[in-house]
Length: 239
Image 1 (cartoon, rainbow, N blue to C red):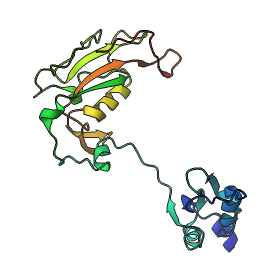
Image 2: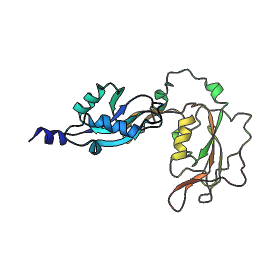
Image 3: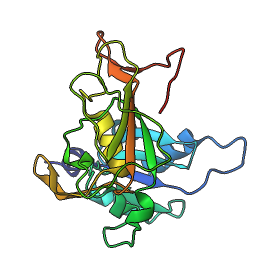
Image 4: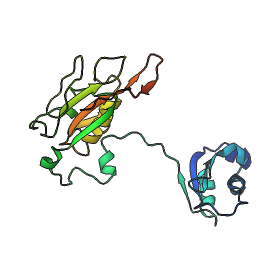
């Protein structure tokens, strides 16, 4: 087997090649420049066969399928700032606040938070979820003037203090697809231990302000054609 054939069949992985900021030269052609750099390092194949895309708006760079040897050669080129593998990150809902530097050990004022009311405009919520239980919560803040009009099979509590629905398909603020429950719990859900995504990323799912109250407004739903849509009624009635 020839060296050219061996390299051509070598497993390649997607890499991001970062070249820094875009030049201010009006004659500069990112695509031409990127392909020229790639052609200088690709072995056993043409640059077009390994090319993925060119980045020419927010930053200057490109993506390509490269061997380890080719990525090392690129990293040593004068024009190249960095070369790193392209990775696919899975949704990790129990890590979101940690990622933002807002860990579980951070000091929070539950008394002050309990006076905060967060309105969630989405697909409703699933009221029985542990994220919305009211154990340890007192009555709703005195400033709350709204109501729980969640419709069929929907009950509020001292955590989930208000609900309304504006959809014509379902006469309830109950969440049928999970999106609204997810966003509401991310914002102000209780801390719920031992949560995972099919066994992956286990941890404590919690909201940024877990002691806050929630008022949910369902304006989004899956329509009969199968798409998720949100609409604005002619007459809004909040609270």
